[in-house]
Length: 121
Image 1 (cartoon, rainbow, N blue to C red):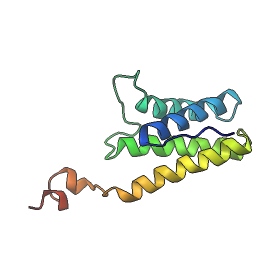
Image 2 (cartoon, rainbow, N blue to C red):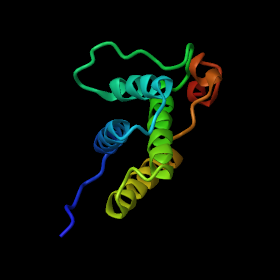
Image 3 (cartoon, rainbow, N blue to C red):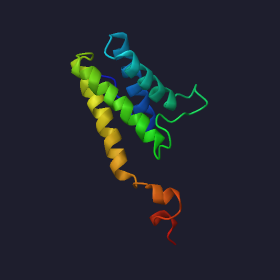
């Protein structure tokens, strides 16, 4: 019987990180891709104290790191790195994260500077 997993953002990101790591052991990524994926995984790691954005002046570094992990999982899937069961579970994880993004308000650079809808009173 398959294990039930309760998804939240932290669990979903941890799962993506673990599956990217697993795919790397199977040679799915170039060294450059592996470096970027490692930085994305580190962004969510509790063991890494300093959270360095993947892109300079990134408005949404969490979203960028999350997107990099999702892309890594998709690349590995296209190379046959995962079993059918794992692929189905990863689809659920990616779908969950996409649904979470759609429910969150979109923050623009203007919002961050106090010129957008968030600053209206």
